[in-house]
Every structure is written in structure tokens, then in C-alpha cells.
Image 1 (spheres, helix red, strand yellow):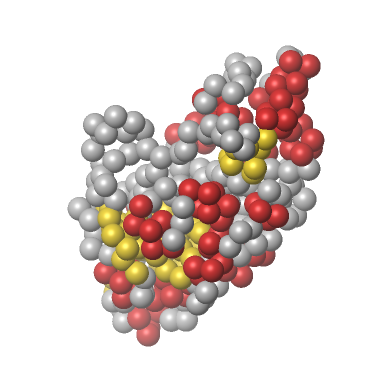
Image 2: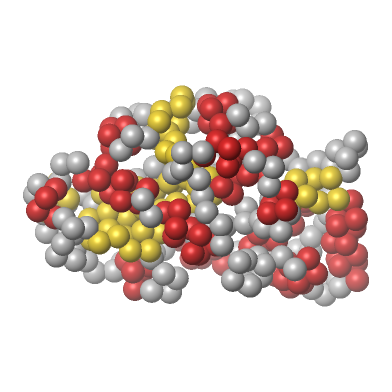
Length: 317
């Protein structure tokens, strides 16, 4: 599935002098720290700056790794809003090169036309960084998904699904939730501050691909059910915190959302057909139906909780 969202324009409130950005509560003193680093070390490039900022703030994942990409995104947003001026890029973004061409990985394409019971049990595996599965995953999405595949920034999980004979039948990508979505925010009871605190408790199914040679009735909804039963634990294992619900955006010009409804996802409404760059409301985009699947019974309480202690120490967007 594809989705679009508009990133917030960060501003410091004159009342509180705080800024919620990348899940962190920034005050003027922290922004001054960034300005001091820039002034004191003009020889640093953007990568060095983001790494040193992570060390200064002890900004790490649950596994102790520097949250370098989160820091880079934070710095870019601060620059775009006029709070800081970053040094010029010393080289093109490596993501641009990685996304231009995805190597083709050999895979079987023989038709799989069976009943669901004849391909079960399905094997669902988390795609590990640097693995052969990752190369296959990227190749399949790039070649067969109508939106293609780009590198993800922030927290994410990739899944490959194989049939009982070990042949790939589906791939799914879960990443950052949309920053703003009116039907979803109304359903959850989110205002801007609550959403900023708790957005990392929600993930977005940004890609779902059943391979084109696979014709197995009810396979898609069955796969969604398998993922729903494990993604919370998988997220906890990878990032040190769970997710409480999953969202997705279905292009209604292309799909009817049948598999999501069959898997008991809730249709919350539709997007307004605008992109995140549509600041003057002139750019039209595909209208998408908004679906959400709660992973726990008390998902609203979890997603509306005041989680300052957690969000001040964590950020991945």
C-alpha cells in the first residue's frame, strides 16, 4: 500500500519554549547546544554532527546504538524551519544511490494456484539486515509492487512469507506511522500533543505484496492475521518497545481493501487526496481509505497515555 503525509513545521511555543520534534521535547537550551556545536566545529560534516549530538544527549536505541538517522532528520527539520544552518553536503545522499537500482535476485516464478490449506503452514520470517532475505525482499518489492521500494528511515520491520515448500508468496513492510491523519486521529482521540508523544506506538503497513504468480484464495487476509499475532513481540525485540495498533492507506482507485476487511481491520474514513507538499491545496493525489487494526484491547489507553518519560528518551522519526 502507499501513503502520504505532511511533516509538521517545527516551531517553538512562546508560552512553553519547548518543541516536540522526532519524539523529543526540545527547549531553547538544546537548540543552543546544536548552534554551539556548529559554531565550535565548522570542519564537521553533517554525519559527524548528528553522531556527536547523539553522544551529547545519550540518544540511543534500546540496544545501545546511536540514533544517528533520527538525529539527522531532526537537524534537517530544524534547518528547514530556520532555527539552524547546517554545513553544505560534502557528498550526495547515499540513499539516493541505493534507491536508484535494486539488484535482481533470482527467484522461482512458477504459478502457485492452490487452496490455502495446500500451502500451509506458512513460514513468516523477519528480514534481517544484510541477509540474503533482505536482498530478495528488496528485489521483489522493486520489481512487483506498483510503488516500488525505497529505503526506510526510522523504526521498521520487513517480513517474508513462504509456503510449505519454502517458496516466497508475500512480503510486507511496516514503518513510521503517518504524522497526521484526520480520521485516525479522531478515532483514537489524539490531539497534536498526544499524537507527538505516542506516535511511535503505531506502525504503518506501507507495503503489502502478494507475488503476481500466486493465486491462493484468502491468502492475503490469512497473512495479515499471522503478522498481527506476532508484530508486537517482534517490535519489542527489535526496538525495546511494543506497538499497539497498525494502520494502512489503501488506494481506492486500485484496490477495494477486501483483504483488510476480511482480516477485521477497521475502516476509519478516507484521506483528502492531498500530498505532504501541498501547502496551497493545489496538488491532487489519490484518495486512500484509512484502515486500522488494534493489537491490544486497550489500544486507545496505550496510544493516549502521557508517555513523557519514554518519548523524551526515544525518537526514531
